[in-house]
Length: 57
Image (cartoon, rainbow, N blue to C red; front, side):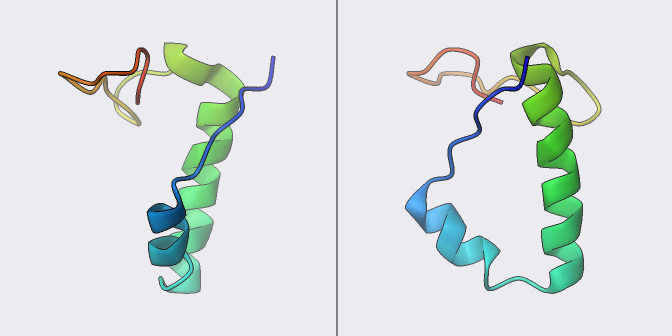
């Protein structure tokens, strides 16, 4: 199952201001997150504490 990753507008602005290498690395990690969804764990992601939204990574 492929998970939908939603980008905040502020993140998009920041992201496209970054060097291509960082963009490529970020897309690589996000593609793994899209594949495994909220079950993906350390070392790539961790749970946010105190979020109003469930399963935020």
